[in-house]
Length: 145
Image 1: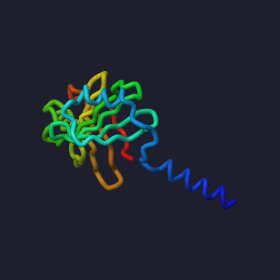
Image 2: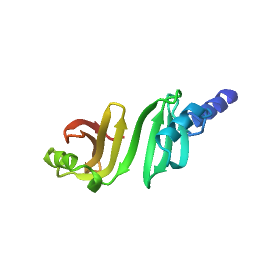
Image 3: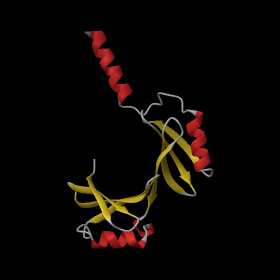
Image 4: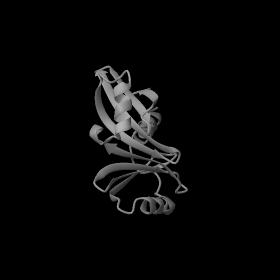
């Protein structure tokens, strides 16, 4: 029984830490360098199905995700609300969430295109992520975690 409890404690610790389990493949690090040659202060996380690089790129906090083959999945770049394209701000202001308080803003670049995610808050219990495309259309709403 003691061994079972120790094993469960160990397994839980490993499962809930950001410990690096695998070595980052050179194909992945090379892909980051090729895509973002100015990346500074790079740190890596093993996300099991992908690798996440957190770094500063031209003064902006950025996260890029890559498959173990080095294929780029997406890049998330922090923005201020003011830095959003005007069409996206217009789309937000025309949405039913226009009177909600805005929070974190992220530009999400994927091979299929770019989206903008705006966290909005009506109350401490009413938080959502709103996703807008480059034309300012609201394409998705999601609950925050």
